[in-house]
Length: 471
Ligand code: EPU
Image (tube, rainbow, N blue to C red; front, side, top):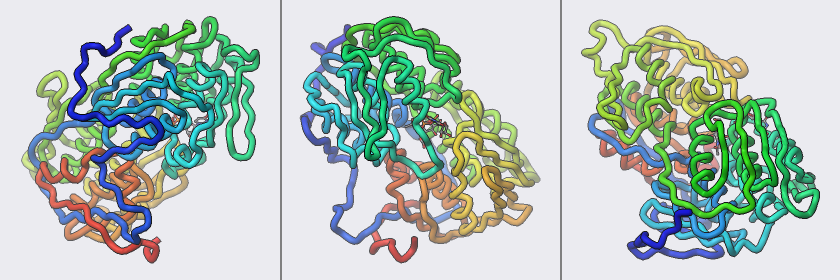
């Protein structure tokens, strides 16, 4: 297996065996009464090229998967965002050694001495729950908190737990913790499990667990998301045997040991999608790379339907143009979306699309079918002048000829992607938009302010006295 005798690590890696820190991300000291905000002056016209960062959700799964591996794993193109910092801290709390430098992360979990995760760290991110699979599979036991993350619905973990039981784990809920151990005291055993819903997280948990189980596992109705494919690739490079990633059935032949390997994290399709929508909402033309076009094809179709011109400049570069000359006398047209698992329209782009639709002509129906509470951005978009009628998990969005007229205001990011939709609306709005609670946005977008500034946007990050009076 690939180990890293030939890799030169520079400049100055820092090694953290019990706590993870990253000096690149600015942090507000906890005892200060200041909140960071984004201030955007619109309307903006964007131009130029941006580099898309590595995928947040692929990185989270792969960092957890390094716990399956003996020796060191080296991940390249890991985004420098707070969710990744939290995940690294979780691994450190178990005794893994994590080094982070220049977008690379090296993890060695041979020294893992604990099976109970730091519960406070874990409650911060949903992805932290992923460690349950590798811990039970490799160390026979795990104690983890029920997961945290964005406030976008109930987000149960029953499929993760039922799947682990199908592989021979005893799983109990005690004092708000999930305690799991192997029933035979030795290790997990291969089995069959059909997911009631193609959950991304449950698919990933079970792939990691089954990779080290004794025997063959058949998982059906699994998630087909690109992040599942990325995880399978990393695990297979580490010695696992997973067939079928990207389809709805996985056949996994368990191995007694996996070995650290090296992997370049694929570009973040949701960040790419957010910038594609930024071009559309500002009626601008920008290009971006690296992008894997097949991972954003649903968005390409929808933006093309609206009137944008999207061209593939080379294998990994897309240009998105929404400049008005494209549709003389008219404007971008409304279109409907219904979110669904991949290859359907991604729920993680639903809020950003809602912002765009307020600037198009006509009315549209936005339906959220993946999460049961992912509409809170509508209320904030309304503060910016959008006309949106929410009814449960669907919304009618009225375009600019039907009463929406974006105008700068003070708004609050309620979750990561909802926060991104406010940035987009702020870019299109006349006047100044102040976005509060930006820690939600910084969980998932690397250097978003600098990237937008480089495209010509008037956006800055600043600090203000505490927000308590606003919430
Ligand atoms: N679900 C269950 N039981 C389970 C697991 C999931 O009922 O045991 C339900 C959920 O309640 C939800 C649906 O299944 O209604 C989909 O959840 P899924 O498990 O697929 O999502 P996840 O693994 O929790 C990941 C991403 C999300 C992304 C979704 C869907 C990570 C860390 N998170 O979440 O990303 O929205 O898949 O694609 O990979 C984001 O990046 O902003 C984000 C929320």
